[in-house]
Image 1 (spheres, rainbow, N blue to C red):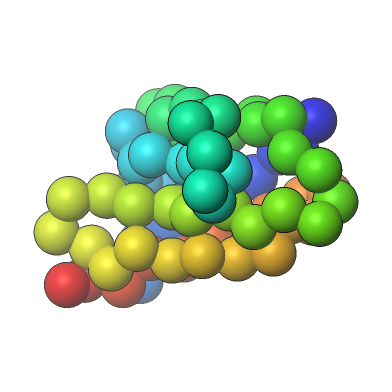
Image 2: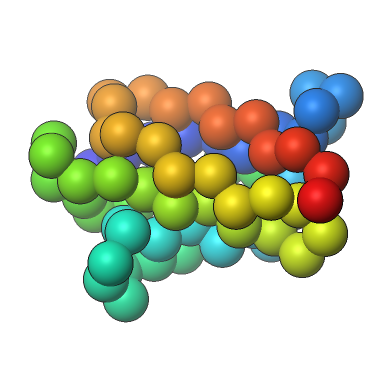
Amino acid sequence: MRNGQVKDSTGKPVIGATVLVAGTRIGTVTDTEGKFSLQAGELDNIAVSYMGMKTKVVKVAPKLTVTLEDE
């Protein structure tokens, strides 16, 4: 299980961001604190997206903090 948090460029949590294992349908959405848990392998990439923000793809790590930028 991989845990992480999604924030915007000001450091505020992004609520309802889509977090997917890249190239699959395995995914989840962030909670009210921008946090998520996702089943992903150690060689997977994770794609994080939110309307109005640029999608970001990152390598899996035990604990992730992903910062999204405005579109």
